[in-house]
Length: 98
Length: 470
Image (cartoon, rainbow over all chains, first blue to last red; front, side):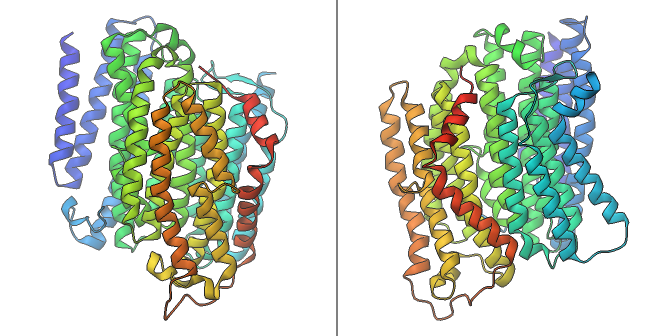
């Protein structure tokens, strides 16, 4: 299924972005990409393999809602971190190591 | 009938929701002093703990999304108990804090998420419960708003937990694609060694390994534990870890039973790496919180050995060990939170000569560390013994040899702290601390638990009678 290729590519683009980007907001966006690739997976499986039930679609709705909640908390944390560090580069938030 | 079931089966969740609402109304009303608030909250939490012990029905709700039985109720009672102890211990810290109610609302909603996680029989419920238990915790980790380390810890927690849950979700989506069902008890019959399912399972287990901080997914643990306030650290290391472990074992034994020959190997490798690396890193820690973080990583390694046995004994020894772990870890955190709240000191250096002015606290900390290390008269020894016995059931005795070697390493760093407390000289030891009544109760219960749980066979027999197996 070509859709699975799209979603898997999207997932790993997101993962790559999470590991390479140093800006916290961009890292959050990368995580959203990963979650959205999972959404595509669910919708595709539901439409083509199990069209008689709506399990996958409902799961997608929940993922979207929870991702929004997660982003809200993460952005609140980043704002608070910006107040004390005056930067949103992750390299600056590295006081604790090993 | 339906309504009746709703109130009986969801009782513990409803009580916690009610407490959250009561706290919200108190927040809306006029300001009360922190002390009277803490009295009210501790009494409410105690009532919440007691309500869990009333007899309970077994059954499911909402098209079997939510299922409960005696084992789940027992696990929830353990979590409730641990939360009550944490609340008692953080009295000294919260007494002067500005945001007491918010603190409890965050942690209680996380606890509620854990309850739904434990009762889930459907992957949707499972995912919602898991997220509900981690997102408030990230906010709680940032609770000291002005501390730099606190916000760094919260950032690390939220990013790594979001990453791990997206791995878990990818696993769930592949499971859904290959089996066509999301109900946990049905998934088992659809599983074969299909490559996509194995990939899904690997993603699933790595998502879990992040949450229980098994090596190689442990890197966030120490930083988050160090940066977060001690009450939140205790919550993370005891409650959230044990809730995820309970869910982990029930999913492994119920849903993935047919893949057991594969996850056996995965768990063995994970547990060996976890014990070894957890122990080696614990050797070089100077901060007490980081030290306990790595020691808790090593404990998870032992727990994984027990789970890998896959037997009835595996699950009962896990629950038994977690009960003991709650007692011993919380006793240690109780002393730490008291010292940190009253003096602000957290490093091992500061604990030198601690015995001179604070003999009681020193003994509490020592007994807790002995129990974590597994010295015989304390309950920690029996917990580890049962775990290793469950792990050895498949005849892999070299695992036991490695675990035993690691226990020797762990003695070194636990005893290093004990040596600092009792033997090392210090010009300025921590002065005599007055212990408020609530932490005193909590420490007394923890010490009683550490000493008695090992000898009361009733406890183990009861857990054993409820346990599940492959």
